[in-house]
Each structure stands twice: as structure tokens, then as C-alpha cells.
Length: 484
Image (cartoon, rainbow, N blue to C red):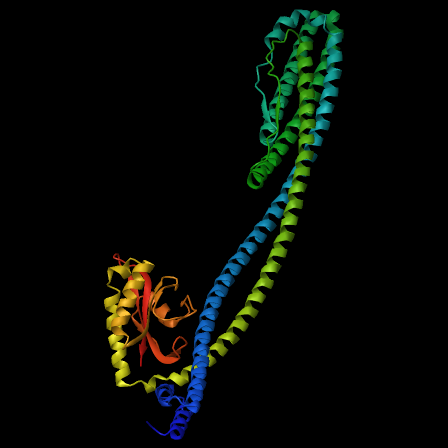
């Protein structure tokens, strides 16, 4: 046994040189005297503190790396959301523009519809005057009734969809063609009446005047109908453009259908023809009025859509602002984590200087190699591959008893780092933060750098290996603290 004073000086000298391997060996030889026990307890406390600092530095490094990864994922998700918000904002602006264009098209169609309504009313007034003129010559045209009846109207089908403005204008064009046909027939009738009156000589002179007046009115009607036809073509073009815009921006626009009765009559006389012509003009006016009402409703709907789009744009701006604030907060967290990681690395390097690998002996290397061989045999045990706690305890303690001259602690863990079996007392139940666990769960057989284990206050290294099932999947880790 060496002199206590020189032994204490040697221990302190080795501690100052940061060689805890020798300190660990020398402190066991201080004897059981009061001073020896005090020095031994003091260095046990120092070892425990350094060991806890080493473990804390590893835990902090693991946590900072985990937070960094989560922060990176959060930043990526935040950027994806911001990109999506930009796309939505652009889409919203486009929808707002289309909505405004739609309102403009509806207003144009509405104005044109008002013009058609006025022209239709004028045509009705002109036709009414023609009807009064026909009444005065009804007795004279009795013999022509048979011929006029042969010039009856053809049947038409009317199935208008108010939402599809193109169909509506085509119907108006059909009505205009009917009026034009009647005006031409009236013109022809008046010509025939004039001819018949001329044949009657002096007695038919008065009927010639009336026939000429009827021709004049028919010409006026034909002129008015021509104007209506031009307007119908214009509204048909405008309605086609409007329909294309509506189909592009509002797929769910409700169609407005106005049904009309089919008309299929044989006119017995010119008066009945004129009555039908008046009915057609009045129907055009009615359809136009309904169209104007529907357009007014469409304008209100478009205004509501525009308002909703504007509200959505405001909400998108608020969300974008929140994302930017969140990104700033993430950046601040990253900066703080970076500082914490730097401090953890400094603490890690300082504490591990006391257990540098340069002090490992040939015997230490031999023990490490032996421990690796022990683990390789252990992971092949059926009781280990089944990942059953009770089986693990039996096998682990059996191996430990055989090799405790080399191994200070033997343990197994599941894939999450939770302890399944361990041969020493510890309050740590999860070792996911340890580098030796992380390397083994990735498939490596790993040997850690030397460190102080808090369980025994000794300098150890930990060797670890993955536990695999029969299919080759990694399902856990086995590790051993090696005496060095």
C-alpha cells in the first residue's frame, strides 16, 4: 500500500491532468481511514457530477437536434402554406376580375334588352293601327278570305332557357321572322286588293286608297321589324359573349326557364293574322321584361360574389401576415436552439476531456472487443428476438453473471429506447438520447467514447448492437457498459 499523502497528491495530480482513468483506480487504494474515505467520497461526487454533466450534454444535444428537425419541418410546412396562400390570392384576384367582367356584360345585355322592349312596344302600336285599318276593309276582303286563310301561320316550338341568353335571342329572332312574314303577306294582300279594286273600276277606287294605306302600314311594320332584327342580332352576339363568361366563371348559375305555349293556328282572315302578330309582339315584350328582371337578380348575385371574394382576399392577407409572424418566431427559436446547441457542445467537449480515449489501455481494447463478441451472441438468443420482458431479464442476467468481469451493466431496449431489461439500478428508463442507441437502431454495431456512468461512478465505454427479428427488421437494441 502506498503512502496516503503521496497517494492523495498523485490522485490530485492525475485529476488536474484530466486523467480520470487513473483517478478511478487510485481512489480505490486510499484505504478505510477517515481521510481516505473523505477523499474517496469527494471524488465519487466529482465523478457523479461529471457523469451527470456528460449525460445532460447528450440529452440537450439530442433535444436540440430533434427541435431543429421539427423546426425545419415546420418551416417547410409554413412555406408551403404561404405558397398556397399566394396561389389562392392570385386566384381570388382573377375571380374578382371575372366577376366584374360578368357584371359589365350583364349590364350591356340589360341595356340592349331595354332597347328591344321599346322597339317591341313601338311595333305593337304600329300593328294596332294596322288592325284598325283592316277593320274598315273587312267587308271588301270577304271574297279574299279563302286565299288569306291559305296563308296561315306555321307551327313553332318555344322552349326558352332564361339563363342561356343565346337561346332567348334566337326565339326573339323567330318572332321577328314571323312579323316580317306577316308584313310581307299584308303587303301582298294589299297589292292584290288594289288590283281587284282597279278591276272594279270607279266603284273600286275607294278600296284602292285603303289598300295603299295598308301597304304603307305594312312597309312601316317591315321597317320596324328590320330594326328589331338588327337589334336581335346585336343582343345575340352580346348574349353569346355573356354566356361564355357565365359558363367560365359561374358553373352553378341557375338557368332561368320561361315556358311559352306552342302556337299552331290556321288564320281564317287577315284580322286573325294581325291579332296573332300583336300577340307575338306582346310576348316578345313580356319575355324581355322577364329577362330584365332576371338580369337584375344576376347583378345582385354577382355583387354578392364580388363581396365574398373581397372578404376572402382580406382573410388571406391576415393568414399570410400570421404565417410571416410564425416564420419570424421560428427563426428566433432556431437562433435560440443554435445558441443552446453551441453551449451543449462546449459542455460535451469539456466533460469528455476528462475521459479521453488516449488513456485507453490494451486491456481496455481487449475488453471492448470481448464485449462486442458477447453482444453478437446475445442478439442471436431466441429469448431476445421475441422482445418479451420476462425472457429478456432471464437471458440478460444469465449473460451478465457469466461476463461481469468485463461488463459492468448489460441492458436491452425496444425500438423507442425504452428499457426492457437492465442489470444495474438506475432511474433512467429511456436511452433514446444516447449516441450508442441512435447508431445501433440505425443498424450499426457501435462503441461509444469513454464516459462516466452515473450508475457506478466509473469510467466506461458502451458497446451496442441492433436486435433484429427473423425477417431482418430492427426491433430493438442491446448494450453493455464495458469495464476499462
